[in-house]
Amino acid sequence: MPSIKSPPSVPWHSWGEEGAALLLEFSPEVVHYRDAQDRQFQLGTISHPFSYTPDYEVTLRDGSIVFIEVKPAQDARRPSVANRLALARAGLAERGFPLYVWDEKITGANIRRDTLRLLRPWRGRIGRDEADEARDLVARMQPRTFGGLIHLARTKTRALNWLANGAAGIDLDLPFLSTAEIFVDPPEMRHAQIFA
Image (cartoon, rainbow, N blue to C red):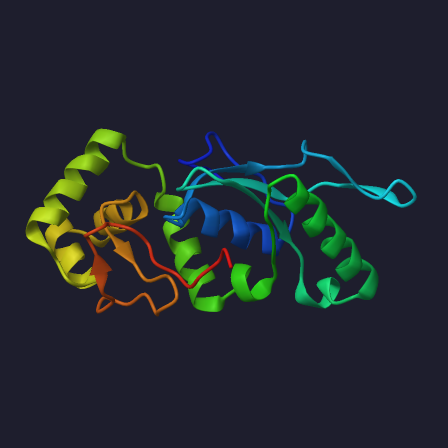
């Protein structure tokens, strides 16, 4: 997936990982993220060691680093998987890294995923200068809805481009309609808590 936060792109290998990569790309809480397949941790005890590789390494806005494991809820409930994830969470916590296990409630939330898939093709299509100019114009004119942003941008294509590149934000967990409220102060996407 093309990325502004993690150029040039971040791979995904399942629908869950696609949803995670989209959410990480657009979440204002995330500064940088990357595929973590090269981060293998030796965890467990001397008598029961195991290797663990998370799906994503994420740098949050406060500078902290966390890891994400994407796992379908049905798989995560299996005793062997749940035990391994609990050991991985404890082992990474000892090293100062939180591990978040994301299932389809986070990565596959229908409205959120549909909106992110709609915005993804527009991400990175304009340069930083044009994005800054759009952000300044939107901040000055203060449109209240996506319909107002379309009017200001003069086309829906340009409005989507502006939205996907940070000129304004929307609530990713609400239906994305022309009446959807947009946010300009700060111009960030909003969503339910994902790092809890």
